[in-house]
Image (cartoon, rainbow, N blue to C red; front, side, top):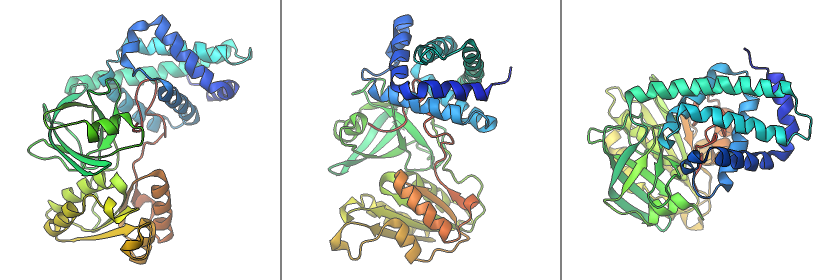
Length: 383
């Protein structure tokens, strides 16, 4: 049966003003009716409820884009394996979700709304169950990794190197979710700062988020020999089979990590492209990876590096990384990769488009459907 997107959106309008209550009631129903699933979740649920609401909103808005939605649901299902999600859990979630929406629709919810949501949810669940089953054939739900190096490069930033217990299949530019033993059931995403290596080592750049559970644990309470859990690799910010002779990388803060991995990958290419890397920081002291970048530039042989400092009077005229790109007159035929905060990515991509870079040559981390990743279990951002 086809999904009735009109009824889905109509019913969502009924409950969206009460969305916070829907989320709270959903989890209350889920945990009371199916107490066995409670162990999948962290103790604190406030952020989890927000993620559920954002995920629901985005699913409702993107139902027509079937191929894209299927791709992201499949990735989400593969990632859900690390929580111990099993096929029977999907039905439980669907029943509780529809019941919570019905209870908060002010009496306007109809049997047709029930049918539309159950149909849509059955489609979503079937895609995710099949993707998880297919993924289980080829790899584990998560990897155990040992910390082999921990370097605190500033008061609030650490570089960790870990060795997974078995080969970790990823592409340069992707990211992994990490779980610290200090915060069981809490996973947070971090970009891998190197391409695949023969020694199977992975490097992560971790900036402490004020009040952040996992970032604080990783940067300040983790030592060599500690063991972390790694979820499966995610992300689309990868080089693929680009045949461009010039590549432009624009990074803000620790958005440097995935771009550094891609640049290092290009250094091994027989006909390696020329590379321009622009790294933006607020203060000169926040250029935490400068020695490594200078070594990479020397090893690469065709790499230009520009550091943009926006708020440090001791570093000459201030400029944002987007302004630095404009000042250096980057040619429009470059293929460009941008990573950093949402504000930095927005400003930089607008500047690059204004300079004539073609949209199809401009790459950012494509979550495809922002907020879909949290779903009913999975986290999206650091805390």
